[in-house]
Every structure is written in C-alpha cells, then in structure tokens.
Length: 303
Image (tube, rainbow, N blue to C red):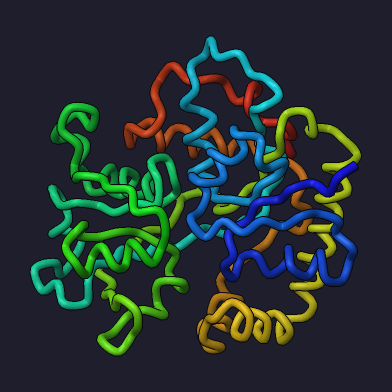
C-alpha cells in the first residue's frame, strides 16, 4: 500500500508532525500547503490527499455548509481528531504605510484579502464582522461588511495590502509578527487588531474510506508520539522552529507558552463543534439547512 498523503500547513504548529516522522517512523507522504486549509479542502475533494491537518473553522465551514440532502461518497472526508486544543490568535494586518487604517473600526466597507474562499482567513473575517456588529446592520448575502479578494498565500496577502489590491487581511499572530515594521522584507505590514478563535484551533480530517481503519489509527498514534516528544523536548522544538521554519527564537519560545496540543488527538468534542457551527451560522458562513454533525464527524470524544 502506498504511503498515506498527509496535508499540513508548514508553520510552527507542524513541529509535532515533523517529530512523528523523524523519530517514530510515521510512514506518510507529508505535503505542505502554505496557502492553508481552504486549499487542502479542494485537494481532498480532488483525491489528492488522504488526511489533512488544518484549522477548525475551515473544516467546519466546508462540511457543515453542505445541504442536508447531500449524498456523501468516497471523495468526501470527516473530522476524526483534535490536534491543538488552545485557541488561535489571528492578527489583523494592513500595509505598513497605510496611515488611513489605524484600527478595527476603520475596516468596515474595506477590501479583505483571503487565501481562498472558505479558508480560515475568510471565515474569521466574518466572525470578526459578527463580533463587531457589522452583520446586524445588513444581510451579509446582500450587503457584505467588506469586499473579499482571494490572493492564495501569505506573501501575496502582504503584497496586496502594500500595493492597494486589498486593505487588510488576517493571519496567525506569530507568522505575521516577523513582517511588522518598515525594515521587514518583503512587503512590511502593521498590526491593527486581533481576534481569537472561540474553539480548539486545529483539527484533523480523513477521507471517508479511512475512517475507523488501522491505517488511520497508526497515523494518529504516531502523531501522539510526536506531540509527547514535542512536550518533553522544548529546546529542540525551539531550535527546529527558529532554524527550519524561519521564526525568531524569541517568538518560538513565546508561542510555546501559549500552545496546547491534545495529549491524545483521536476524536473531536461534540460541544466544540456545536459551538463552532453556531458561531459560523451567526456570521453567515454556514447556512441553517446544513448537514447534522453525525454526517461529517467520524470520531466523537467525550466532553
């Protein structure tokens, strides 16, 4: 059997996955997706991935938005595991020289850059709009709180806020932090706000035929070993993040204080997903007639 194809975002959160393959013989083809969760959704549905580690809001938006009469098949996927239990801090950024944008209050009606429609950077924009009360002023489907322009990846988003293609975008805090200030290159940015996910930030999906299989179980067990090694070897984690993933050592150490990986990744909590779906419905990302949890969650863990 060919090695399973595992999609992941090549940022600091991928460190336990690296340890799982380096030290615990995880037999998988690890495929980086710097463009994020939305791209992995497309690749899963195109049959290019078997398993993927991505943002909870991206997976939930993709799965819960399918209509209740949708007929699932082998090209579909389900949530099977919880990778990171702590929330994610999304930094809200604009171009470094954009003096007209000083804070979140200046963003309504502007153009928001996202990696892809349905990605975490897209979904969290509407969660922000819901928090700020902008969606209460008009129907998001008729008069959205801001324009949306997909720009594929982090570098293009930074470029976009500097050349005026878009006015702001959202990306993970520590990844964004490297590019704050006029000396950052290429495409310096400035932070104008932030928002935390009100849910566990990273989850794992698998194609339908893998759910409940020994192949999936082995991958998740090896990932558990990688998480344990990460927790027990913080200095090695800092070294890998700063030298191989191009983060400042200071930022890597600060991130370690904030992140909490699941001790056992297997399964997802119903209460977390119910809360996520409710918030995404309020934000207009998921409709009221979507599929029930049982249809797109492969493994439920106890709350």
